[in-house]
Structure formats: C-alpha cells, structure tokens
Length: 174
Length: 428
View 1: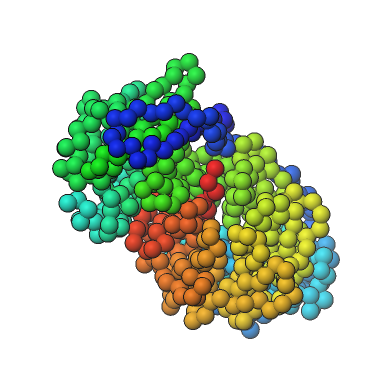
View 2 (view 1 turned 90 degrees about the vertical axis):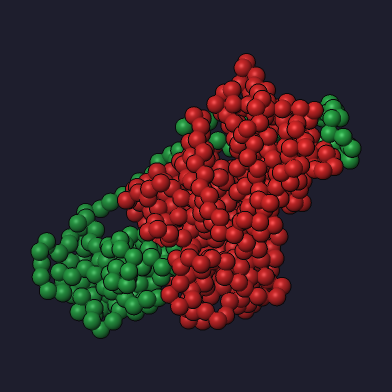
C-alpha cells in the first residue's frame, strides 16, 4: 500500500486590505514544497533462538499444577495464599537444572499501559526473588511483563480485573 | 441565528468517497458557544474526479468546533470566483466569512489545483487568496492545507488539519499500528501483529515512529521509517524494553529498561548503537519519560513515594531531587507537555475513574477535561489547542478529543474493535 510521494505545492499570498473581493489575484510566488510521508508496512524482525528444556508433566496435581499468582490492585507482593505455589515450582526447578521458567507479569485494564508494564514486571520479579531465595539459579528464570495487554478475562468488571492481576509461570519448551 | 443552538448538539458525519474511505467516524458531542458562521461554497470544477474539496474544507472547519458551517449545497452552479457570489444571500444568513474558489485538475500530471479566497462579510474584504496543488489521490491533503490556512487567518493559531495521527487498533488478538489524517481518513497500516503493540511516538520530523512491540514475545523498542517500512531494534535487553520518548533533536530516545532490575529510565541513541545511559536511579518503578519541548526537563512517572505520581527533573541536574507535580490523588500517570511547554496533560485516578487532566504549570492548577471513566494516553494537537485521548465508550476502546479550553468535545470511533494509544504527529 505504498503511496506515491505526494508533492504538495502551497503557493500563497495575502490579499489583505483589498477593499473589494473582485480584485484579481497577483502572480503566484515560488512554490513552497511540503510532502506527506508515505507509509510502508513493517519489515519482519529477526527471530530469537528457542531452546528445549524440561517442564512438569501435563496434568500434575497439587501446588505444582497451579501456574498463577494473583494480586490486589496496584500491588506486587506475593500473598501467603500463593506461597505454596511458588515454592512447589522452586522445588521443581532445583531438581531439574535443565528446566527454565518464564514469569509473565500481568495487570488489569485500568490506568496507563506503560505503568502497568512496569507493575507487571514488578509482579514477575516478586516471584523471581522468592525462587532465587530458594536457591534457583538466575539462568533458569526469565521475567517478562505483558502489562494489561493479555487479559485472561476480557470482561470489564471487578471480577475480571481480579483474575487479570497475575503472574503466570510458563516453562520454556512446553 | 444558528450560532445559538449549539450546546449538546450531536451530529454524525459519514463522509464517503471512492478515493478515501472513512475508516473512523466523527461525532461532535459539544461545540463552542461562540461559533463563527462561515459559508464554504462548492468549488467550481470540483467533484469531477470523485473528489469534493469544499466538503473536506467545511468538515475540517466544523470539526474545530469553532465554526458554524452553513449549508451551501444549493449553490448550483458553483461560483468560480467572487463576482459570481450571491453576497446578499450569505449576508442575510449572517455569514461572517465566505470561502469561494475553483478546482483545476490536470489529467496529464494527475494533479489538482485549488484556488480559493477567504472573504469577510459585510466588508467583502478578501483576507486570503491562495493556491494549493497536490496529487489527485491525496486531494484531501490539499483541502486540509486550505482549511489550516483559513483557521490560522481567522483564529490566529496554527491549523492542525494537515497533520496526522497514529494509533493502535485491535480486533481479537489482531493488532495494527496505523497512521491516518487527523480526521481519521486515509488510514494506512504500519504494522500488523498478533502480539501487543504499545506507545507509538513520532520522531520530531514525522518521518520515523518509535514503538514497543511484543512480536518476539517480550517488549522491545523499535524505530520504523514510515516511507520504507524498514525498522531496527533500539532496545532488546533482558526483561522489558518500553516507553520510548524522543529527544527534541530526534537523535536519542529515553526508554524504560528492566535489565538491571525494575523499570528505570535510560537514554539511548535512536540508531540503537552504543550502551544505554541510565538517567535516574530509584527504588520505585520509573516510567513514561517525556521531554519538555526545549529538551531541558525530563518529566516521568514514579511510584517512589507509594503510588504512581508525576515528577520532573532538569536534564543538567539528574543527580538532584526530582520535583513532584501531582498531589491529591493516589494515581497520576502519562505526562505529556503542550507544544509551548506551559501545560501538562496526564491521567489521574479519582475514586474508581481515570480522567484526562490538564495542569497549568505556572499556577499548578489542574482541571479534569473529560467525563468518561477509563481514559488513557492524552496527546496534544501540534497547535496545542486540542487533546486526543483513548477511553472506553459504548463498551469499546474509542478516541475522544477535547479542546484545551474544555468547551469542544468529539469522539472518533472505528466501526468495530478497539482503538487506543493515539499520538498526534508534528506539523509537516
């Protein structure tokens, strides 16, 4: 959808103070050239490498079967309720040095997209700190924030917002 | 007569043509109390190549909220110049101004040429006599320049109809970064992606766009050249890379990186070359950097005092203590400076509602500008007279526009899906 470059010539002069509008226009001065930049679609970005790794078996029960930590509005500390979940994943990572997690921080739809990106990062980091305190290696943990861009519940009410304020634990290669 | 009836007047424009489709519709919610009646007469020779420049000029002027555009469609045949105008008729309709002109289309060069005059009544004094020329495909652009000249002549401030806007549209998971004329016409996609796109920011010269893309599954800052579609990654460090803000010289970007822990503000060359220079050090989330128009002051959001608030710090004293600008709210985000640097637009939470606020930096007085409740991303028109922002209306993400005096309100909607993250481009 590349458009031809528009060359717009604006030639102007003021016919101010002419008492009658029937006065004819004076010869146009040298044209002033302006242009609207055409728009071409984006070229692809180079891909990042993906490596294979271990992850908990599908259908595993208990705390290890849970992959989501939830938060209160504008908060990023892991509450007692979700500590067993983080702990279970920490144990798995300690016993599977080949396993790698991506902690994805998320927010509800209210407020600035960029501030929510920062808040989501804080949420992912709050889980990372607990895992590192358990002895999980830094190289096994990656954090990312999706801000408010990836709600699990697309509704616009308090119940949906509570579901969307979360950190998802995702294993690489899964 | 007509200029009294305007509060609460709701008009929906649906303008179509074979050349440019209306990608968004415009609804004027409220208009100025003092509107200047103007008759934009049909241009002689217009409408031949599926264009109607006089309608575009009239629609632009109406959209400013400052003009009452009189119905001129009965004016057949269109007067080619001032001697064919029925002056008494327009004076009896209280017109303060009449725009009269003609359009010539050159079949060989595929160009249209618009000659027009702006005449004041009752003196019949010609204030403008101008010629604009451009390609027939982009005839709207020619008309937008004419409307800008008329607005500037009558109001004294620069027009903005020939500037462009960028925004994100979303249908399900399909997102697009789009550029359109400021009236929502002539929309073109810069990027289509299944992953989030955020924070588009025009370079000061309007030729490039910095934005955040999740195409590689985590946020990275890229710069794309509009004309070619070529792009390069400016920041793809560990963690998240976001919130680009151009320095006024267009050579650097402030960005927010988490490579050293939590969200902090860095400066990096727009080319992406070199090592990011950390500008501020705090324990909190620092984000949404924005440079003052002279580049001397850095505005940003930080939750260093608890909730997010807006701060500023001089670029020549980054080791000093930032000055906090917002008080009386638990949540203030998204600072944007007016082109003259005197006003600050931002988003504030009041109870459960998020409003566009406008602060006079001299007095620190701030006013809510909207009555919607989930506002985001305010952006100033290049003449500083209007603010565009995104909000939720009728269950969808839409764009609202409000004049900085608060009197004129409009909304721009797509037919389906959501639109958000608007950003107004510079005058070209």
